[in-house]
Length: 519
Image (cartoon, rainbow, N blue to C red; front, side, top):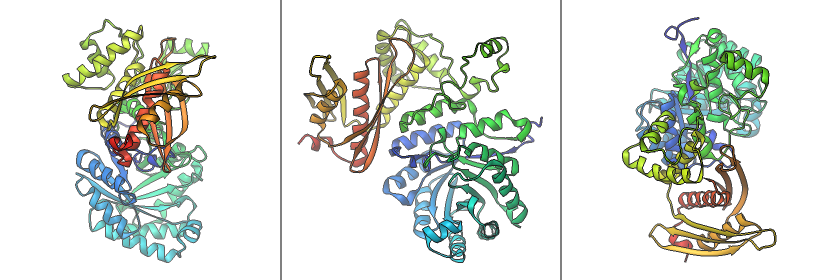
């Protein structure tokens, strides 16, 4: 097998913050995007598509913040083939160490005729002019002919040749609607290499959607055909059925170097934590049987499989769980554990903190350990996720106290105390159809911002009667959706935390002042 030094490198282009955010109900704040971007930098991705700067002031702000604070990867902003978009993209990314403008336009007859309502010649001229405009700002320009997998081949070759001549350094071939199958998509990449005269002046990228469940497979087929950049999202997030799952593509490359003869710059040990962070922030759970990062990815139920793995791990495991950063799940901490033990375990999980930060986390750990006999790695991951939310998000209200009275012959009643930013403490009570509804009604009486609960989901973080419950909710306000997460050994308290998380995010994003909501 070829050594890593002699292998070609496939660049990993992460679009979690742009295409991933387009998952229905996945709106992110600037602080959340920045946190994910910093984790992607640790993961070692080559390019971060930080957003679509022209789409909204919030997206512009997020792209600009990431460009200032995340220095190692290339920072890209998406833009339509529109001078205003391209100008906005540059203004947002010009502070980046390595800026890239990524511009796109529809190329298939179907989309040109029915969406753009232009003719192919107009599209080609606009694409060339847009690449030239982007090139006037920065050397690194990527061009995408949207719906390339359904574009007439001869027109696609003509378009790619023209934009490369205009200065595009990367040409991306999107399977925008997830229509291709691997053999077909691989052949399209080969045909582009053989038919575009100046293709050697640009890197070929691919951006595959998962409508038929083939995004990762199509991406790997493209690599085999000569593509040297792959675009995708952590956990396969994205429009409709999502994008290529980056952790799957990365580990396919890592595991099958013997066949693919390429490598990446990814530090794979950060994959698991990155996946969990994105899941926590977006509120989209990772399915148990998800490849690489799902809860069952390295669990063996069959007796035959268990016997084989106990004798030799590689009999039924093609990847070492530690290679992707899976925690050991050893039950090593309890109420007698000290700061040193907690620090050591958290560092093993990838969390490095100052003494002040550790002191704050330690108090929460001791509170949890008093309620649980043993604290697992999964419990610690949940604890750190809660700490992240406290550290990075505006806390218009802090949940101080929840008390519920309920039963099969009683009217569920809840009393809730919240503290506002100015230190004012407000207590109110309400009844509801159940204990959770009663808590939410009591909170609503204090916060006074109308919203609709559209999703409520409970999962156990660990096993056992003393397991923490993780609650995920979504609320809707003025046509926008806000996600909230909370965890606790008491599911009612976890529900209250999740609701407060969603409300605080809503107040932060909308700019509503907490003091006005109680007037």
